[in-house]
Length: 233
Image (cartoon, rainbow, N blue to C red):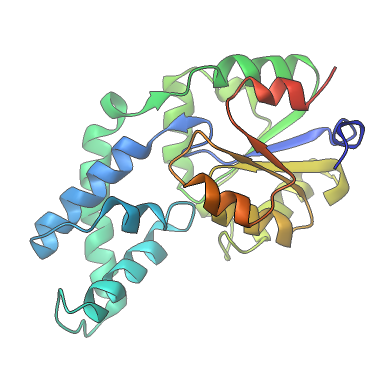
């Protein structure tokens, strides 16, 4: 995609975790503590990371099924109930450590502020609950820059399904060719392509670069300053 084409895309949609704010240490700490409390062991961080960008309840079910398949735990009679138990435990840990553990990404706030000043319309499309997104934004005084937030509360189908992105376009009264989705996970890129948006993968999140490249996003950004190079004046 040529840069002159990208400048016609005036709607910029961002993922939240791992894209705008570094929540990876918090998420991994919460997963480890949850697995240790409920099952008495922890999985490899890579197992947790591959679920990033999907609905948390879905991720917990997927990881539980993997533990059953690997023989690390016995058969789970009611997978939804077990996921509920894991979710409640996870959220207790996550909220306890949230404010002291999340971190800004160097350069992200400056880039987003400048994009807003350039009159781009900015939104967030995240698989986490609105309460969590807003709490993170408020900690780093970023909330005022975003016109809309589409969270897990707002949709029936979650990433990598395109529904969250299509809902964001509807809120902006914009067509797919007018927007781009920027995220750190493979699920973000799949969702963006399914919604027929241009996609940009960011390499400052936890996903391995080769996994992002394999999905052939339109752009791969190495650092936040490249956001301003991508979107010219």
